[in-house]
Length: 306
Image 1 (spheres, one colour):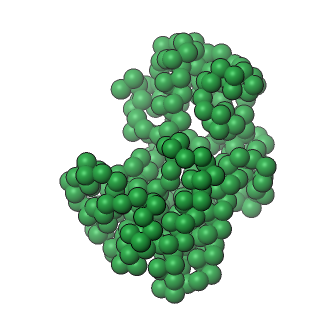
Image 2 (tube, rainbow, N blue to C red):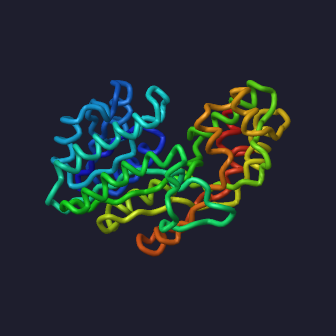
């Protein structure tokens, strides 16, 4: 199977590429630089230079592939979040327009943040979207996939949790550790009991591939394997890693002190817990290898390079 992967050398994309290649698939990966292209070549993939802004490049690659896994998203803060979602919508439309009427699979990435505050118990995919929450904007990208599903593309959506972790990567954990070192304390927003879901990046890669193979058109899945991490426990783990103490502060103080970017602080006030039963039952996801994020922060991959 020839699979086009966006973000092919990124944190989420690289494990997907590794798994696809191990299964004998031909991977064409979107890369932004020659250094990334060389990494992909060494891994066994075929690089295609471009960005998510290059709609013609995306369309041609999608049309030539047997399936697409879209992991790229403008997380780097170079554009406002709403603009990043608009860019993603355009990229999704370009690729799925080129795939219309083929019934080829298209797997895209969203986030559990679209549902906002869930309360203390994990919720399912049917939980209503909070349109007032800042990250609900990304629902527009999910709608683009649903439209594609109605036009003969086997499009599906994976909602990634806030904490995709492991292999000394991710966005939030290194951010938290760096903030702890900078401020001399690992902060958490009070009350500290708010909980969030997570998934190890290697377990996530398996779900991407399962969705590519089996997900029906128009389906949405929460991609989570753990629901037991509170804001305070995450701060304590990061504090242990950084060799500092912890402090609980208000949301307003977090913004005023610029502990994290404002949009990150808006996430850290939430309970955001998602149940992955649907993915496990419908796609056969399971046998999770890594579920203890806190241990990995304290004494695992993050500690090894702290």
